[in-house]
Amino acid sequence: MKAVFFLILVFSLFSPRVCDAQAQNPLEDDLPTRKVDRKVKENKPSNFPKEKKVWYIYVKDGRKVLYGNPCAIQVTHNMGFEYGLDHRPEPGFRPWWGRFKANTATKAMLFFTKGPWWKATVNKRLKGCALSSGDRRG
Image (cartoon, rainbow, N blue to C red; front, side):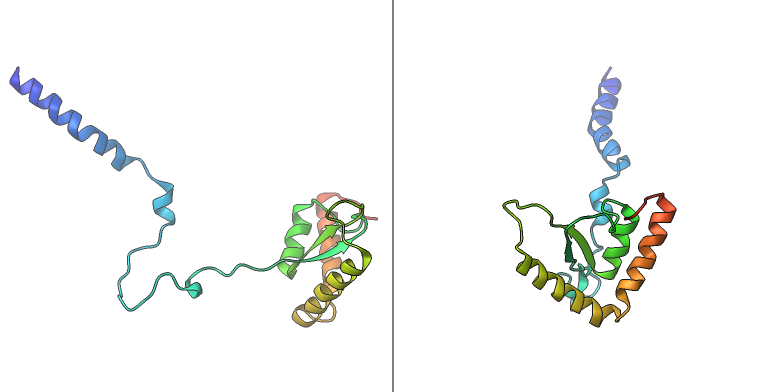
């Protein structure tokens, strides 16, 4: 009787630990490993992945921009911008002068970072996205 009680006691003490050891915690997979060298600082900004800032080009209607197409969004994000619809007078509505300044700044940034033919490149890639997904433009 004492042996059975002892086995039940040992089993009840170790069974939750066995279950915890078998379950995988996805958070632990994402955490970095421990430091090997004490001189290396882990929480430096250079150790984190760079977040790419997305600029916006505001358009009045979204007929030619394939708004909502995942392929088109990926193409424009790879170039560093995204098309934004600006067609109604709402509380967040930009007047034409604000839209002009934002678009000019974004297009100048694209001109200097992606080259003078960035618009032709985007249109060519968007045409490929439209053909592959079956969307019609314009």
